[in-house]
Amino acid sequence: MPEFLGNLHFVRYFSVEKNPLNQPPFEVAMHGIPALRRYYEDLKAGVVRNYEAKLILIGNGRVGKTSLSKALLGEPFDPEEPSTHAIRVVPQDIHAKGYTVKAKLWDFGGQEIYHATHSFFLSTRALYLLVWSAAPPEKTDDAADEADFPYEYWLEHVRTLGGNSPVILVQNKTDLKREFLDQGKLAERYDNIREFCDVSASAGDGVEHLKEQIRKWFAADPQLKHIIGFPMPEAWERVRRALEKKAEDEPHITYQAYLDLCRAEQLPEESAPVLCRFLHETGVLLHFADMHSLRSMVIIDPNWAIEQVYAILNRPELLRGRGRFGRELLRQVLADFSEPEIDRFLDLLQRFELVFPLDAAKQQYVAPQYLSPETPEGFGLMWEHSGPPVLVYHYPRFLHKNIMVRFLSRFGAQAAQQVFWKHGIIIKKGPQRALVQADEAQRQISVSLEGHPAGELLREIFRSFKEIHERMEVEARVVCPCTENRERRPPHGHSLEDLLASYQKGGGRLQCRRCFREVEVRPLLEPLLEPREKLLQRMREAGGEIPALDARTAAEALLPAGKSRTPKPIPAEDKPEIYLSYGWEPESQKLAAKLEEAFRQKALLLRRDSSEVKYKDSIREFMKRIGRSRY
Image (tube, rainbow, N blue to C red):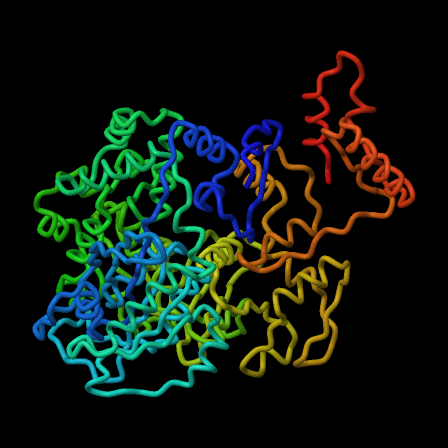
């Protein structure tokens, strides 16, 4: 991305989505022009090359991830190695072609209670080792170790949180049992799989070959090439090193202390927030600037945060109490914490979407992953509505358990008479009630309503699932209201994408595949649409002045993240103006004249600074016109 973009002060919005940026890092570019400007300004004060990267080990508990990580480091095998809880981070030098990658090996605990925290640490800037074993796992006394997921689940997990990051699929414990995979089929389904390796961490078999593959893909993988050797402001690197050193003694500091450290390392004050966001995005630290209660705290040792989370969530009291706990438990576990620090830690648990408040006055909370899988007593009396759902989400491969954990964490406090369980909840808002429940066997989540469907509650539910589903493979269907759907199961639903396509093209009807009659599109789709003014306000808050939106723009806001959007066509009577600047040299003048003639023949208007900017006129005003141009 060229440096001059940082000087275009008239630019209000600049999108780099789906562009393979090499420089600056995507984690900088995603925060817009001000961040881009600071990055290039800071580079002028000194440049270092980044050779740090992440090597992330994920997989079920007790498959030998820690033993494998030690084998990669040349450490001896320990048959009594305990199962990893939280995250184990160790440095490892990887010697590649002409340089050394300073890798940090992240060994993630595979227990289910950690899955919800992975989103804060898994990133696209990493090579993943997905470790699995065909050998039966050893039994332990730790209930958190018991859940096992197939390797396909973890491949989906990487895809959801790590994008298209490269994966090496590692079968461990092959000295005990080996399973032969259909590698071609798996590689076709998951195109980010780079290699299949069979190893035995205990016997040392295959470890050297795995090391060679790690070196190979760090050097050659197109997803990682932009990470290794990219230019980084020297002051940014100094701050990062200082934070890592400070983390050896203090797991967290105040934001003011962070600013003081930046000042001591001669980082300009305006660059400190940009660097803080970059370090948060890359997993070096945790800082939640969007939460008032957490804004003043910077967690510079992320592993400490996960250890504290585990200390709470692994308590046997939670299992016995079906996820319910009070502040007294926090006081016991976090004995060194002051009351304000306990408050902040509770906010952190809620930010991780691991708990929700049950009764704020009594300081009671719920950890959804420990809820009973059975529907509560009295559910039939609380929900008598027998009609079909209005919205169904189908997951073609896996219904991730974390989806309902996150959803319950968001809506648990709004449960009608505290009716919720591990797979569902009844939500009440004003005169409206909604039943949201997951069916793991069918791999789907359904949303049923009592009350008028056009209310805010359905939009809130839809909006939350849209955020939770980012990068996930999911099919959203709006259930047809026809009579046949009320009498037969499962109900037929219209694809959300089909509804949007019809809506955008002005089509008013779609054929139901259950009753074969045509149904109106607008009543099916509009209950999900944000009210016009609310949507406009949110877009203004996201960054600057927004032109008037039409129905098409509002509808496209419903598309899941990652889905392609249909470009808005240019009306025939509204041809674009093409602007040409900096074409003053003789050769450029000839080219500009040819372009002007070609555009004239196409009935397109070319506006050139050489003809539009008069004597004593400001070129800046011409540039502003470019910025205001619709196209």
